[in-house]
Image (cartoon, rainbow, N blue to C red; front, side):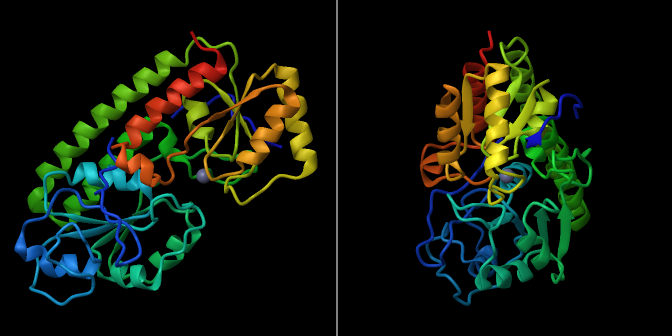
Amino acid sequence: MRVDRPHAHPNGNLSHSDENDSHCGYPRLVTRPLVDHRAVRRLALVGALALSAVACGSESTPSGALVVAAGFAPLEDVVAAVTAGTDVVVIPLVPHGEEAHEYEPTAKQLDQLADAEVLFLLDGFQPAVDAAAASLDGEVVDLFADIERIDSADGVADPHVWLDPTNMATMAGTVAAALSRIDPSRSTTWTANAAAYAARMTDLDGEMTVGLTDCASDLLVTGHDAFGYLAAAYGLRSVSIAGISPSEEPSAATLEALAELARTEGVTTIFFEEGLPADLSATLADEVGATAAQLDPVEALSAEQIAAGDNYASIMRANLAALRSGLGCT
Ligand SMILES: [Zn+2]
């Protein structure tokens, strides 16, 4: 059984463009509409469709825009926030709606990464991105660097740090410091943006703290082992059906042990994640007479979430509502 972090404690905007890149095979994220023509060459290199005049892969005029890459959705959220109001181009790697853990960058993305000044990643979360980073000439920044790690129930470093909003605040500071090394002339901007983002994450953390203080149950039963940092931050215990990666599916014995635990603890809600082993969550819920409710690990946003204007903070607030209902919080 995966389990239990009963203690320990250690921060939005997923500013995706609404463009789905039908030409280049993956969606774009830009920090603002780009109008700087110096950026055209860079935009061409990253295939950004936000500037309609630029076609994927086209050769164009030189650019001074800073191009950075982010491993997956929460990192895009942080980087977009820290670079807000500037001409920085943020390259996303995981297409909307796709599974982030096991995502493998395409050949075209690898070419684009080679052109980025910096790649922000979370070491250990995306093995294929970690592998690609090893061969890059540009800077690679591990946003784990300034975060206190906790282990999963299986004894490996749990990479799901973003599910504690205070860690998002910390990551914003790490991004600002990295960008200040690369472009010191805009250090004031990076720092101020990071501070504003951190303040928003602190507010979110406060809401979650208050909202999860007085609950009938403190046991979180989830699809995959993504919520350890969240549980640790808010005094909950977490157990999961799948492992640290949703591809780590459980044995029959693990499922039975979870069912037994859920019955013993009087669990009324089994949480599931869209695209993850929802069927197993539903089966478990049926078996123990609980209801199934969605909890979003914010690893990749769906096209519907993008269209609705969702971002890290809005999804976490939806998670808070689901948790409060599922755990019987008053
Ligand atoms: Zn995960």
